[in-house]
Image 1 (cartoon, rainbow, N blue to C red):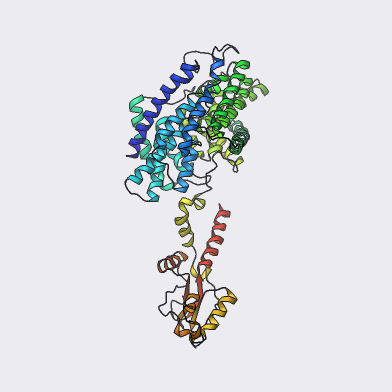
Image 2 (cartoon, one colour):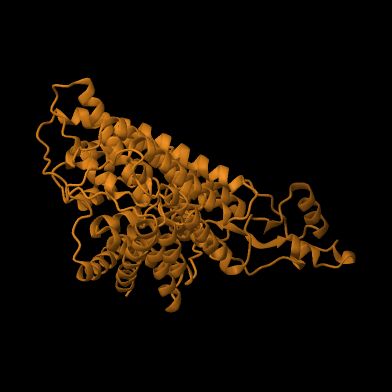
Length: 570
């Protein structure tokens, strides 16, 4: 059901984008991206575009309108995939109104020239569909999270036409070093269904057309590894600019809708400035897919690649850093493509006799950038092959992605990504219990236990509470056999004038105990079920023989110790 709904949402969203672009950038702004397949040149003569006096203001207007929507639906006031990640880990799924709000906000922002992608919004839309479906059918948190992943995969699969990669991406982008394993197969199903519906309506093939590049020689791997390192450096610069922009706009004490308007104004001015000097500035507006397409065919000169690379990073940071409505995924793909093209251009400049296939470096740069920026290398590799229909450069894709990922372990474009499931609030209970299943009671219990005899005074117990801070004590007879337990609450309930009486008059004799060879998970369940905070630990061979005591604090300390060991091991 989620896959069907996401497929329909993808169809509607795609249609809205077509209408929005026709009315705004194309209609009012008079701009249509150059078409490589139609033989159109990428660059215009500088300063010849007729509506520069109009188009520079469009991104600001779109940002303002998107900001007004975000004021009333805060879920859309960040990159769509970021919202999905945050919603998953907090299990505070987006409201139903998020779906039309995200659609309208993204169309207004991007189709007016904001530098963002529609993939992020459809991820949020799909995950919201999944969450609300789970809520409608009364499903618990675990199932709602799974349906959120299915929805994100379904939405991305439709818009990006990458059914395999979308399922992997939706499962992997939640973590830096992990993957939502349980969601992969359901995500595949949702992704396939959604893609089939979208394809049935639009009959759309791969997003990008590529020349027939192939992997020809192992020596190419040296260059591809260097490309991975180059892309990693660009990714660090990109992430720094992007997160700095977020910090700057978040610190501005102005009404929230004004921030994306200012960001849009910056994008418009940047595009016009670059357009007047180079004739390619308008390619910084909107989704910018033409940047990737022309780069794949090696038709963008080296100097323009530098200008466009810096311009795209700045334009995206202004648009999304100001909390404009859109996604960071597509711009990241374009930054990777431009980085690959730039690296190929530098190689050609340094070694004129070298036969450099620029498009191959562009394609591999896309995968390397996605891998290190999103921390989802497998999904990134698969998605790039699906986007381009080129499966012949896999060795290069894999190597460059690995190198770029290893060099950027501390960097990510998604602030709410968790390291792994162990760190995720969404998995706190199950991961806690999983860790506690590894620890036996005897490893965590306190062996040196202060005990009282049945004939000891209740006053002595109260004195011990104030002296040691412990609030419960086993009671043992002369043979050290366990006969009861006395707590601070038991002693406090005794009238003051009777506190000189024996412990046996106030102790609890219906004992709940633990054995040394049990797991802490079993012990914790027993504590919770009975509403108590300590368990006497007795020998399994002789249930009367006290061997220690286990408290809630002991469990917490043991869990922290083992968790730290597991994290270091990763």
